[in-house]
Image (spheres, rainbow, N blue to C red):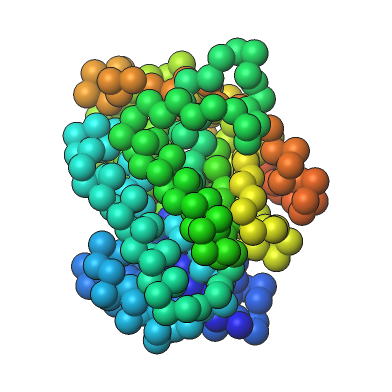
Length: 319
């Protein structure tokens, strides 16, 4: 069986590659990479995967990649996923996430392949929900509050449209907050952990910089997330969409305080206005009943272990 991961060099993609290599010995694993893609996250497994040079923004290169690989399963994880950056560069975000997804699906359609396809949408599509809409179900309306969220609404709906129009085996997920080792430092909890590690190593001094600490998130480990993705592709029906998320709900301030608790160094913090978004999503608590009923999946890694592993990841990078 051939499995293709777009975004294999990223945080989630590299963890999914780890999971498949460790648990599915019969899989021949492929990844799409651009010539300039950083390989840090897959350096330890680079000789075990087949990297194919292509670019989601270039349809011709994607067609050639599909003709070469002929995958049985496609996990589409590649994206411009930094919400804050999407306000600074909305056109790039929309082009990368929407046109990139369109090119992926078109390349599969025109080559007449029939793989199972996972379209990775986001909980950001729900935007700011009302208190009486908690927990958020898959039928909740879309209220995208950023260009990134708009791009993910379009990506989500493209997946559904290609399923309807061309009978392609497409399943969509709306993943809620997930983190852990390799998480980019543009994301709040990883930014906190990186700064704490830098203070510990006397690279920077207090106070560390933070943004909005009031947002409420249900958090999960990225290694549980990729396990969920794999299980889903074995059991799900085409055309379906699933919320996936953890079972620990905390504020961003709770996350910051937990990371500070793991440090033997005094850590102080202050708000940096540049880290505040023009509009923010402050309440994200999912209903994952539909997904759990289908798969029996449950998160295994504790919130505390996830944050400690994240902090240790940044500590090790400084050694």
